[in-house]
Length: 398
Image (tube, rainbow, N blue to C red; front, side, top):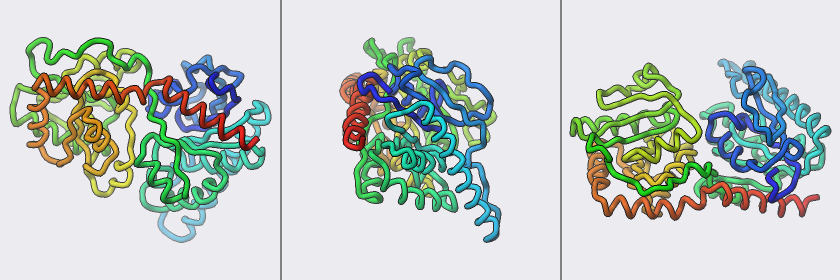
């Protein structure tokens, strides 16, 4: 684990560093000072050996399809069949974890959300080995699954592992409150840690070249952002030539068009990582943080904590949020006055927000407030809280 804690740790996660997901990025920051002797990542990998493994960690790759891809065909027989597949997958995953643990000899285990089998499998393995285990909730472990069998399975599994877990971590208070209501215990809130390079070192300059205002979005584009991005494009088209939206994403233009995202004011760029993406964020005029207004996804969006949130507030660039009013993301920016949050799903309020951001005093105030809250997303702050939780909880159980 990180050296501030000094415990030998197994981390079970569907995404681990150096993958380009937000979950992997957080884990990479939390275990930045680990070594192969005190940190073992256990993960799925369909593509064979990983490239760019961290020298500071050991890896156990499980080359098997995750149980979450098992579909449910109509009929009672097929539902029982899927139940059997899931239980078998949990037992097989637990056996792999147990075997790895007997060789690695950890002091504790950490299971992450993202797979319907990882948490119950780790709970079973930890119970067998009489080790404390913790759950890191990057998302709601139940509500992240679509309504249906997988969500029901996750709910049943949660009732079991929640009685065995030594401690839980959530990235925001909204998710922590949901877990408290369901489990009767509140997770420790640790903001998603970001790389030190995400913190802008220079004063932000608005529209340096006197061109169209450059609005930037960095990250994946799918159902969770599409309608909110479409609203911004409609707003931009109300004043042609004044604003541009630049998207840096692994999804290509064909995918964006399939989501209804096509405009002469939309510019697509390939996905970039590391210091390059931080430079893009810091050099933008405005950073855009969208979340869907779909009623069917309310439970997921309400507690979501995108990794880019921390990167954005650290960047020193003004932030425009377009997300439902009851979401953690909107309330975070409203409460801290560290960005402009538009909570109505239409174009006109977005245009008014952009006009507000054209005022220098408003921008400076927002950026200064963002710099204050950005401290909670720093690598050192998150590592310290994480280490304190594991050390304190593990010491009472061993």
